[in-house]
Amino acid sequence: MEAKVNKTVPIPVAIIFLLVGITAGFLIGQKTAQPQGIKIATAEKGEVLLEALLSRPNASQQTLEIQVERPIQKIYQHYSDNGWLVLNTSKDEDGNICIDALPKGKTRDITQELRNAVQPAKQQ
Image (cartoon, rainbow, N blue to C red; front, side, top):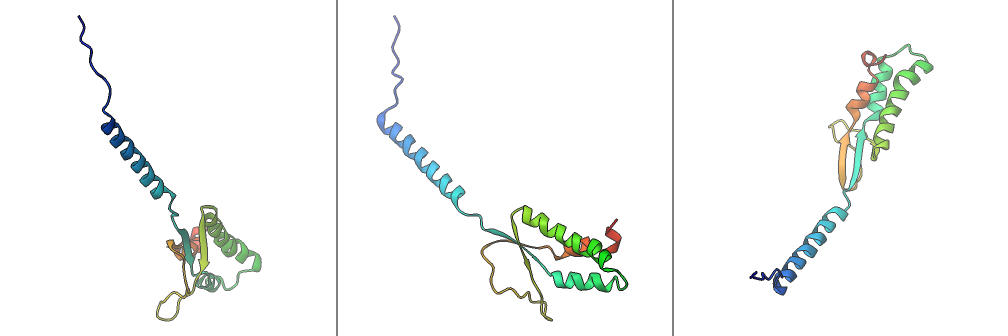
């Protein structure tokens, strides 16, 4: 003779599992649905341009376009293509960045990347 084993789950246990699953799904949905904020890159383009122009006093307009303007636009395009908002900033004599307001999000200063892009030694 075979003994029959009851393989059913009691109703209160099933309800608890169901509530835990619904709660977990809700909390995961809330966490992933929240906006991640705006990614912001700042750059002191004026400072970089001045440094580049002063380091090339006899450069022609075409040379400046190739060695300065295009590398800067390439960096701007890279950040723009990757979802970044690029802001041109300036600093006062005390080193304070002059931006009136920024939305909440990730901010990255890309001034050094611009500077590196227009350095004569870095260009081919």
